[in-house]
Length: 178
Ligand SMILES: Cc1cc2nc3c(=O)[nH]c(=O)nc-3n(C[C@H](O)[C@H](O)[C@H](O)COP(=O)(O)O)c2cc1C
Image 1 (tube, rainbow, N blue to C red):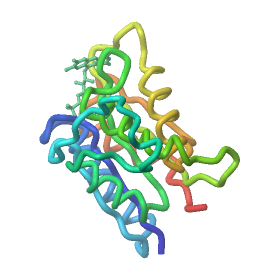
Image 2 (tube, rainbow, N blue to C red):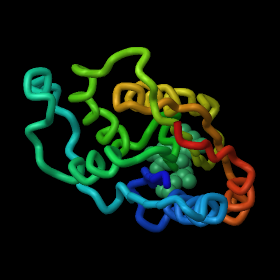
Image 3 (spheres, helix red, strand yellow):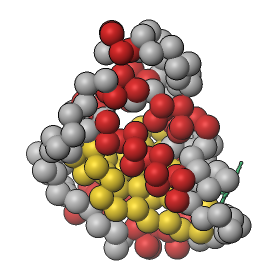
Image 4 (cartoon, rainbow, N blue to C red):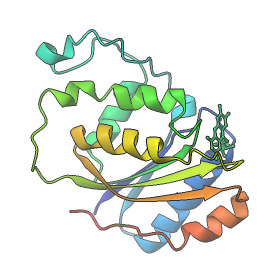
């Protein structure tokens, strides 16, 4: 039995990402009925941004105690990760970037070439910014890699209704655990 974690990365509790995360969890449950599926909503977690003090270089953990402990505890037991994030000016929203930056303790201990667990990013946008969403993918890939995950696939739905997103999600790749 694998654990599959869906993170809704939007600061909005009732927006498109929250809805898509819920719909995705239902799809995963259908495809993998024996797996455990958990949803974490960053809108419910207070995660302070990294201050760059780098005390984690020696301590291998952050001195701040906040919602990040919930994320880290859940990630530790996660086999496959799915992140549903809004696109903010081509990149991640500040609360999600704060979560990614708090992976810095992993940076000091990660080893290149170690097997990494699969992750999938679903990016949601409205308005079709001409600058696209590559920065969101790059920030996600970079931080996830030190945390032991590999972003194997990303999908973007721009100007799509929640119903359309739900229909599209049925076709995305749901990777097996490694
Ligand atoms: C500050 C801000 C910046 C945004 N920048 C973009 C963008 O660059 N590209 C895009 O397609 N949508 C952009 N959007 C729209 C959101 O990504 C979109 O509405 C998304 O569905 C919000 O997710 P939510 O409903 O879960 O909060 C932006 C929205 C905000 C508030």
